[in-house]
Length: 182
Image (cartoon, rainbow, N blue to C red; front, side, top):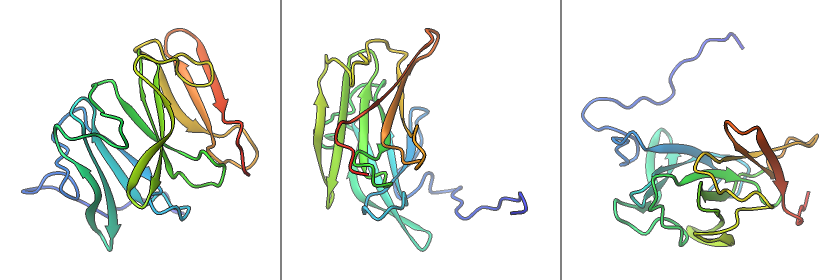
């Protein structure tokens, strides 16, 4: 590695955004996701908290196209409505396989936390704590400042645990499922 980076994809000009998702709101978020369950986070999840808008894009030879799409005022994904501007999503490895093939969705300040499984484009909850809810693993997600992400505290480096923290409070937790398969 020479420390030099060059672009492999670049979009600018008359067609903003990527794969039909315009990225015109400062609320827009993007993350990588293993949609095909092959150990590669090679799809992009784009969403706009508070609008119910979400798209999952695949890349085929530099051309991005949706494999899942809900526009403004849509249904969200897997029953999770994405109706709050506080909503956040991250990719997660529930089964300890090394594949970021689940989507974790949460709403800070409400205790809401969901895990969605993808089966051929049909997303369904495998864990659902409603609004209001009690969070996950004892962490209540009761503060609007709460944040979460996938992590690993083991030797294998598999992100099958969830880190949760509350900025400004010193609170930091790591939780895991009791159903580790690897």
